[in-house]
Length: 240
Image (cartoon, rainbow, N blue to C red; front, side):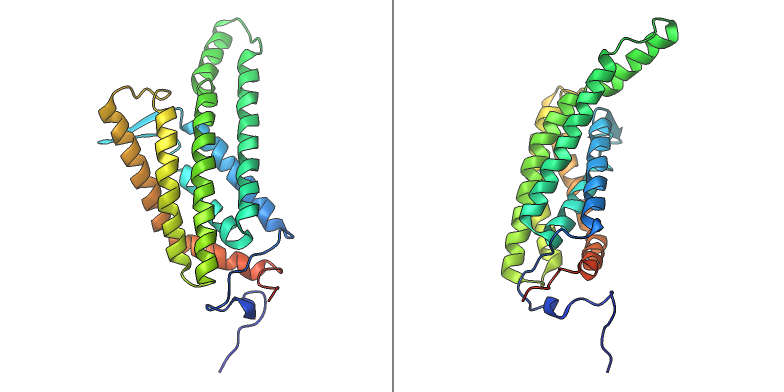
C-alpha cells in the first residue's frame, strides 16, 4: 500500500468524484501563461496576413500558432474558472490591439528616402499593413469563440466535477472553433487575397478541421499541463 505525497500529489479534495473547484490567482503560473497567450496571439495575427497553400488546402501563416492560444485558454478555464479566463481573453486582446497600433505608428514614421529605405518601407507596409484588419477579425472571432469555449468547459465541469476532463476539453473546443473559424475567415479572407466562394469554403473548412484536430491530438498534453498546474497551485481544491 502506498500513498501520494509531496508537490506532485493532487490535493485530497480533488478526487475524481469531487465537485468542481478552481484555484485563485496567487502564483506566478497564471502570469506566465497569460504572457505566452498574448505573444502567441500577436504572432499568429502577423502570420495570418499571409495566405498559404499546402497542396489542396488553403490556410494562412498563423495556422500553426493559433491552436496554442486555445489550449492555453482551456488550461486557464479548467484551473482558474470562467471569470479569470474572461480576464485573460480581454487582456490578451488589449495587448494585441496595442501591438497593432504600434505597427501603424511604425509605418507612418518618416524613413530614409534612399533605395534601401524605400524598399524597407514597402516591406513593412506589406507585412504589417494588413495586421489591423487581421486583429479586428481575430478580436471578434477569438473573443466570441474563446468565451464560448471557456463557458462550456466550466459548465461541463460544474456537472462532472474533476471527472471527464478529456470530454469537456474536446466538447468545448468544437463549439469554440466553429464560432471562431466562421467569424475570423469571414473578415480575414479578403485581406489574404481570397476572393471566390469555393476558395473561401476551403479556407473555412480547412481552418476548422485543422484547429480542431490539432486540439484533439494535443488533448493528452493539455491534460498533463492541467494536472501539473492543479498540483502546484496551493489554492486548488483548498476549499471544501
